[in-house]
View 1 (tube, rainbow, N blue to C red):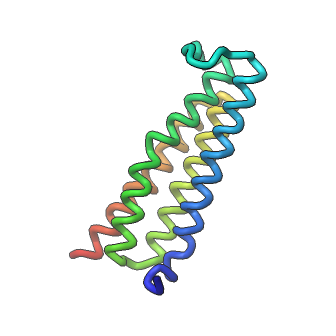
View 2 (spheres, rainbow, N blue to C red):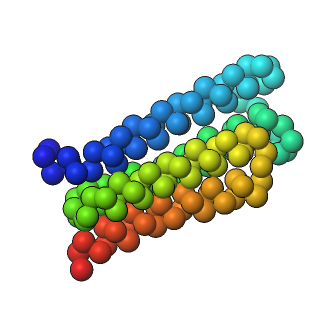
View 3 (cartoon, rainbow, N blue to C red):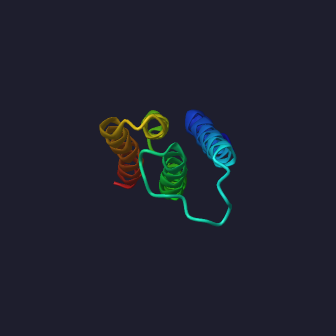
Length: 134
């Protein structure tokens, strides 16, 4: 496991992404309970409702989570320069946190910007791993 030491920040980011997902789940559950939403029924698709925005924030995070995990594993096994992997993992986390907050507060343009930031983190992870093979 010594080969993982240079990627300690990335390992921390994985844990923090898990914590972020847990927080999003708690926020969604509290919103569901406060609105007395009946489980199993669709949430009305309206950005004016916090319940919808909280649901979409969690769903959007889940949509990119698998890609993040796969790219981190690819990078860890490719062993590129660690500071690049660590940096792009932090960029991804920053983008996800910003996206979540902007979704909660209905800041549509900023939300899109933070989404792009998280995508850049993902793309950076992939390219960094590819470069280790060239």
